[in-house]
Length: 178
Length: 178
Image 1 (tube, chains in turn blue, orange):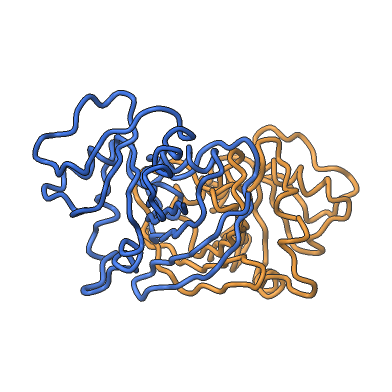
Image 2 (image 1 turned 45 degrees about the horizontal axis):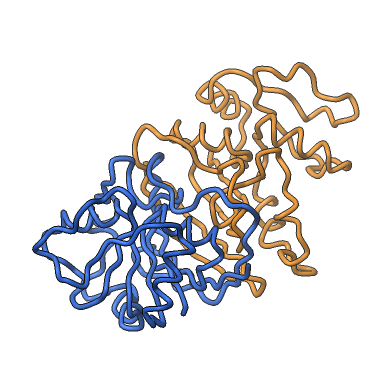
C-alpha cells in the first residue's frame, strides 16, 4: 500500500490560516480556468482517503461532498459521529497512526491519499508517506496551520519533477526515503 | 535601492537547525562539483550585505571571511564589537529596519543582499524586499530557525522563474508585490 500527499501550501509553508481559512488559496489569481493542477489525474489513482478532523470539518463547509464514492477515513479520537447526509463509505477511524495504517492495509487499499497538516505530520513521523506532491502558492500569509511539524529525525526526499504554472504556482513531486 | 534575498531552505522552511547548524545543507548530496547555484552571478550584482547577528556569528565559524571587499552591515542592538581581524568595511548597524534602510540608501548602495531569518522577516514586514531567490533543499529537518515569520498582512509574490538542479534542489525567483 502506498500513501501520498497532494496539497497546496503558501510560500511560508501554511495550508490554512490559523482559523482554518483558505481564502488566500482559492483567490482567483491562483486559479486557471480549465486547469486542475493534476488533481484529477492524482485522485483517479487513489482508492481511499485518510484525513484529519479539521480538514474534514473544513470540507463539510464546502456544501457538496467532493469525494463521490471514494472511501474516506476521518482520523479522530474526539469526533463522535459522521453527519447522516454523508455517504456510508465516509467513516471515522481512531487510534494511533500505526493502527490506522494497519486497518487500511487489511482493507486491501493500494493507494491512500493523506490530507491535513496533523495527519500528514503523523504519517511522516510513522515513515508511512511514499510520495508528496506539493503545490506552492506565491503568497506569504505569515501565520497559520503549518503543513510540516516536528520529526524524530531528518527525512531525505528524492525530487522527481517540478512543474510551473503560468500563474506562479510551482508543483513538485518528491519521493520519501526514510 | 533594491534589496534581495538569496537563501537556501529545507522543504519545511528552515534555514538552520535550532542550534544554528547547517550540516543538512552542506551535506555532499546537496552539492554539485563546479555548481554554485547562481550565487556568484547574484553576489556580483550586490554592493552591500545586510545580515543579522546570528548569521554573522555563523559566518565567523567558517574561518575565512567569505565576502571579500563587500561592505557588510551586521544588524544588531546587542553585538558590542566586530572582531579586529575582520575588514574595516564590516560594521555593526543598529536601530529599526526603517532607519537601517535609510542609512543604506544614504550611503548610495544600489543593491543590498539581505541575509538571516530575523533580518529577512523584518525587511519583509517593512515592505523592503524586492526579490527573493529561494533554493529548496529536498530534506525535512522538523525543527529549526524558520526563514519566514509573522506579517502584518499577506505579501503577494510574482513568480519569475524556477530552475531545478539534478540533485533535487529547486530554485525559484520571486518579486514581491506589497
